[in-house]
Figure: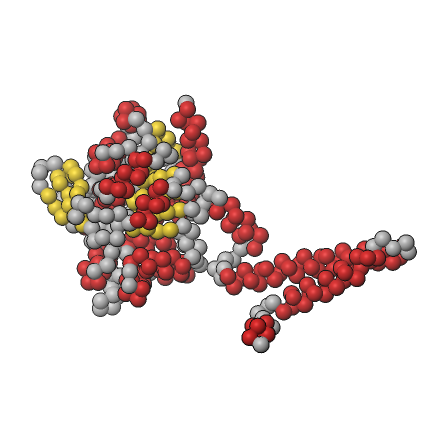
Length: 415
């Protein structure tokens, strides 16, 4: 009786299922009746049976396709494309390379937005030392890990519709207590309280946004940053490090023995390609490499490990830095081979945007090719910069170049 009621539920009105089941049954009856007579000696009977068989087969094909589409529209409500295109894409992307992208801030999310068009196997390992803005406030008030960079990466990998993505990025402009907070940050904070862990909150948020891949905090411990400057002074706090006008000599973690997130280690071990950057060198990328086990696992991997060099210097962090200076800092902090390749922008930078950046004391990163080669990394040049509003990396152009380098990496090594 229980099974009977389960069957009856499939006959509820409005499911868009009954009609296609009916047509499937009718078409099968037509095929079964007509097929024995296709070889009949009577010519008229033979033609009529053949025509009936073809019509029945056509109805069967359309009905099965429509039935699958009805199921699919429920399972994937955000999709607006043709079913066949989505199936092809899912099959193709599921076979894509296993990519681990390490960093934080705007830079990492920019790269992820382009990479998700090439593979579903993306693991974004994100720094969790942010102490400024909305993330810093929530970190202090609720004792959680900073959600800002996590949120940006989730939205970058999202397949959800534009409204849902916009909702997660929406920032409240007024209201006591919530002014300056983004909805996504508050959502992750609330989800942490409901699920009992930041890790589970990210997983649930990933489901809401239907992301391609995974977003993984580099550590689940509460980490702070401390900077040592070239004049021997120190400053603590991620949001305060770039306030100084001094040159940074070294970055430290507090605590120095912070443990890695086990999921980050697993992702690196399974990686076909590892990407570092772009983004804030000292406060987004290097903090991940200061976790000893993460650096060791990256160094062990005999795969393409590419650093995406920043297009512009960042005032308070990399003033006057060349491309080789960026690599040198990665090497000096990790003390291991964490990169074997570097991608540098060769695209023309718009004068009006350069002028705009100069007001913030940000200038183009000089491409010192010879010094890069002396360091021992493969160097690639490509036009990967966006020319609209900001001198950031273009998601699509950068991802395309990364995949091209990945596909031909073994040939470059042989040469």
